[in-house]
Length: 122
Image (cartoon, rainbow, N blue to C red):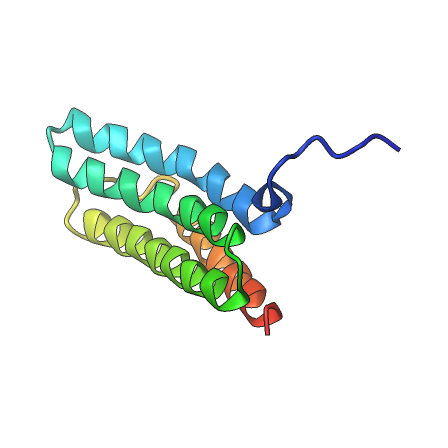
């Protein structure tokens, strides 16, 4: 059996992998916002999207489960921030409905995974 080449604990977490994956399509939405000269919205969405995986990664390096849980809480809130922005942008016709439902479903699943991981740290 080949040795696992992943160096960091977070790389083995399915929730981190999914959070890292969802950042790409959220980045595409941010690109569309920037094309419409909505730079502040674009940067806020990019930051929140990256914050999900960043906080999972940073928390996984904590020395205690309580610290890790705190970072997971921030990641969870960042996923909610992304979902809120998508819904507000769609509601105000800043972006169209294409792929929004898929992104919202993925963010919901990531939130559920973060909650499960947090509970497993007890």
